[in-house]
Image (tube, rainbow, N blue to C red):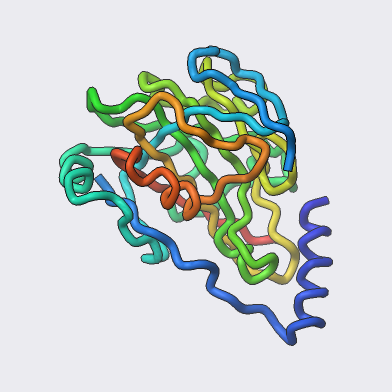
Amino acid sequence: MRHLFFSVLLSVFIIGCGGSGGSGSKKSPIPSTSSSSSLIPSSSGQSSFTQSSSLISSSSSNNSSNINGSFSSALSSSQSSLSNVIPFAFTSNSFVSGGKIPIQYSCFGGELSPQLQWDISSTEIKSFVLIMEDYDAIALVGYPYVHWNIYNIPADTRAIAEGATLRAMPSGSVEGVNDDGVPKYAGPCPPEGTGTHRYFFALYALNKESLPVNTSRPMRRNDFETQYASSIIQKAEITGTYLYK
């Protein structure tokens, strides 16, 4: 259904504006190295969540590149120095970073959430956050489309199993609402005729166990990095691509 929704949006956008365009809002840099509200304590240890607004903790990371070169650092120089000396490796057994995401992880297949794993060592890390978004949706809807938000990932977690969304997430972690309006993983679902889309998986390692994040709204990378720059120790990214056929 999402690809049909995107097709309609694309048609409206072309008719109204005479074509696609827009590069999206300017990103802020991270060094490599409305609903009613309720509180979800970071110590709850629950893997379930509420769709109402909630405040939670998060953090995560990955070893890699700011592919668009559009992120500018919002961290202090002291934090930058710290993050630069922490190796942060972020990979997936489900796809090769920079390569095509297999159909079983898309809306055209079983829509399994992919396996993810990382390696980082620092006593400063208190939690992780993961954000997945379709950067190339900007030309269609005007912003990167959020496919997955995960908060409160425990500091000792180093992997998320394939198909974990909604049923086997790390204990204590919380899945926030994506741009489909559902608190779960949404697989790649680009509209026909819109070319290859890039899907960014950004993992942030945080120095706090809890952050005041609203899980009833999608959280984009740019917004997260701007609002919580002082809490981010390190960031890592991997990307996958998908082309509608």
